[in-house]
Length: 316
Image 1 (cartoon, one colour):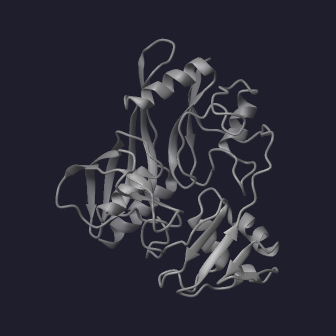
Image 2: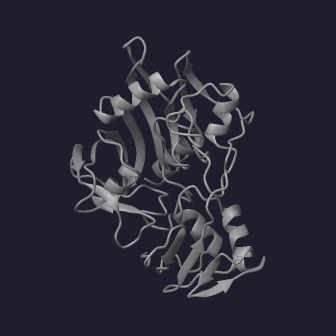
Image 3: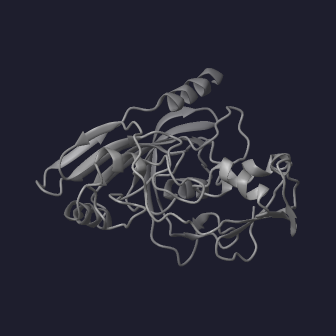
């Protein structure tokens, strides 16, 4: 998959053989981060999508199947969000005090509003829960958000309730002192039991929808260890030393172990029906901004992750 010269808010995807036969709305929603399928459908209906330079529109166009070699372009308007509205959305709160809260984010929830996801996000939920009392360092769209995880990644996030807490946690991220351990199911078996990927990550020059290991990228370090060998898959723990966008997904694909269900960096089809990367932010540890006490939290694997492990074990 490659893209041509990209204009601001315009993305062009070249369809490869693995994507052939997939609905156009599904391909675009999978390949563009934080954009929902329903939003893509609206853009198709409004004439914001073209195939090989020809605009496709109408309600039936979203059901069209793509063909190998086609170039699909989509124009995403600038977000018009001026205010994020608090919403009464249930939260799985692991810990909370006057300075911060630790939340266990479910798979499928977007962290902050973005085009196609103006509400129903973690930010909408925490604004309601905290009655607006959140750090303002990251602006209106990301109040309290110190770090983020992808929509289809589940697990632990720390949210800052005030600017002092936010600054302390951000400083810990900067010096790599926050513990972040993820569990993942990846393709292929490892020869070794553990290892480290130390490879810079930047925008993929061949496809600006993705990141990639590339010269001139920012330093990125991921440590991993095998938890269980599962035939042509492996259940691993990956610990972040740095925190680049999609770091685990990019590094695992780079060493030929893409995540199961990762449509963007791995195979587009899988025999187990995973519709998103099998990645869970399991352990989060940091020094409390006010007390200096080290705190560590452990999130149990979600039901869909456990179910996938059992399916794979059943095939071995």
